[in-house]
Image 1 (cartoon, helix red, strand yellow):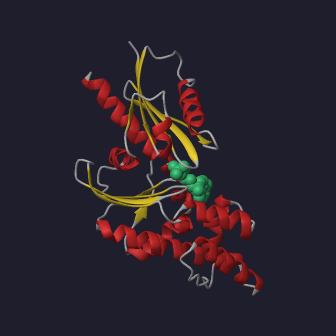
Image 2 (tube, helix red, strand yellow):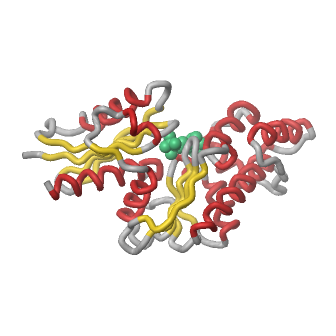
Image 3 (cartoon, rainbow, N blue to C red):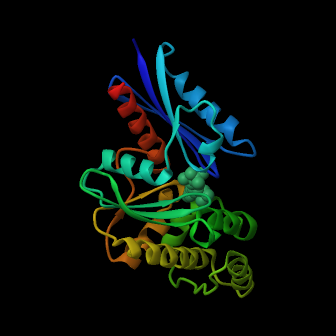
Length: 263
Ligand code: ADP
C-alpha cells in the first residue's frame, strides 16, 4: 500500500506542499495564497499529488502556517514554529537557530540537538521586519522586482540610513531619499540594514547559537542575509539542499510521516 505523508504550509503570502513517500521527498509548487487560503492549500496539495505516478492508497496530511485553521483536508495541524524547526533540523542537523522571515511575520527559533524547539520569539504585529515591507518598498516606491533587491543592494557604496521603525514612515523616508537623488542601490541596502537590525534584536533574545539557518521567502534575498550576518556577527545560511520557502511544509510532512509510521 502506497502511503503519502503530506505537509501543507498555508502562509499569509504563499501556499506550499511537500510530500514524503517511500523515503523520497517531493517538493511541490509555491502558489500565492490570495483571498482564499483553504483553496490555495488544497491546490498546493493537489498539484503536488499530481506529480505522483499513481494516487496514494493512504495519506496523512499535516497543515501548518497561518491558514492551517481553515484546512478541512488536513488530518492534523501543527504550528509553524515546530514545522520550521523540524524541517531545518532534517536538512541540516547542526542547526541550532532558525530565522524564518515570511510575508507577514518573522520568527527566531532555538533548537535542541534533536531538532525540538527550546525557545522562540515571534513578530507578527509589525510589518517592518517582514517580507511585506520589502514587497511594499519594491513595488510601490522603488519600482524594482522583489527578486532584484538582493543583487541591487550588493552594489551599494554608501547605504542610506533609514531611521523609521514603522513601515508607513519608512516608505515616506524612501520617497524623500529618492527625491534627494540617493541611488536605489544605497536605499535598498539601507532598507536591508534596517530590517536586519530589527530581526537580529529578536534573534538575540533566543541566543543566536550557530549554526543559524534562515528560512521563508525572504531567505532568497542575499542582501538581507548578508545584513543579518553582519548584525549577528555569525554566518546565516539558507538550506543548501532545498528551497528555503519550503522548509515549513517539509517540517509538516516530517510530522505526518511520523504519524503514519506510528499507526
Ligand atoms: P508566508 O509563509 O508567510 O506566506 P513566505 O515564506 O512564502 O511567506 O515568504 C513570502 C515573502 O518572501 C514575500 O513577502 C517576499 O518578501 C519574499 N520573497 C519571495 N520570493 C522572493 C525572492 N525571489 N526574492 C526575494 N524575496 C522573496
